[in-house]
Length: 137
Image 1 (cartoon, rainbow, N blue to C red):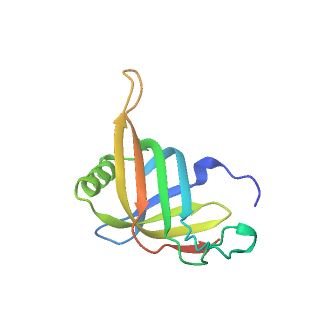
Image 2 (tube, one colour; image 1 turned 90 degrees about the vertical axis):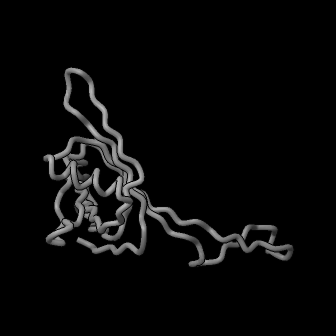
């Protein structure tokens, strides 16, 4: 994969009415993290006292963090409504030159901020809430 522009990573949410995915905001910074917990099965007879792990047994999670500005009032309203309603909705993360990650996420943090001579910004955190799929570009 060659170098990519950070601004090309897109975060989209499933529209509640049409089921189409729409870009929710103009994100200026964003991070997608995948995590996998391990299950330690080390015992007294483990070779050389090295830790042993059970393959495929750990819990997988993903989280998304981003900050930026909302595209419009509708996007702001959708995010705010989903946060306060504890809604789990399908999201897409499009990673240029790599692929698309899609699946259910819940908004776990929503922050608004701004300086007196600047635009209103937001910070958003999402946590995976089910199985995710990955489609290669």
